[in-house]
Length: 221
Image (cartoon, rainbow, N blue to C red; front, side, top):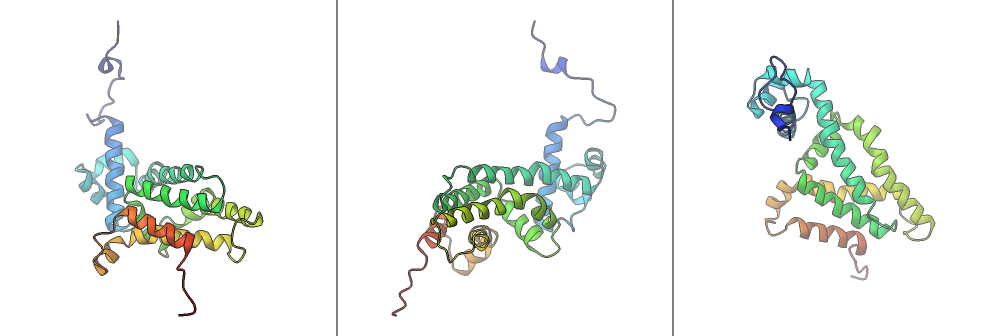
């Protein structure tokens, strides 16, 4: 005889909320991330996270203990997951500079489409001096993506497949600047240039064209 899901669950511990642990925990992580995007990690309180989630601050404490533990959970279960997604996207390339560039741009746009908070978190918590996640970027994400990408560009350059006048490390810096920055500043340049006609597909096409063909400036004029 099949055992129903309800009958197979362990008895609920006294004081534990009626909503399933997994669902409520995910809800609290989403609420924390929403407040980090709106206010910044340093300015966000557990009270504001509780308000965002529609629960009491005591419930946030129940699941995460304190703010530092909550931030760590967001990092591990949100940010590092996104970094792993982008790392996987880079593996789709064949190792040539062109395929690496396409894989990075396409992968980043797909990741941001699923996780639209990423550009804001990058700009506020990593790019900005004093950002709460800068050390995380340098110690954990850097080896996964920018340093690994620079090493692949360097290898391609030694094999004659990349402009010898380029520094592979700065190529990664330029690549990030041409992708994450426009996404982080999207609300500004859309208003500045009345650019409502530019969707993410057009933005992606522009970035690829700029990297592959450059400005094609005629120095005679």
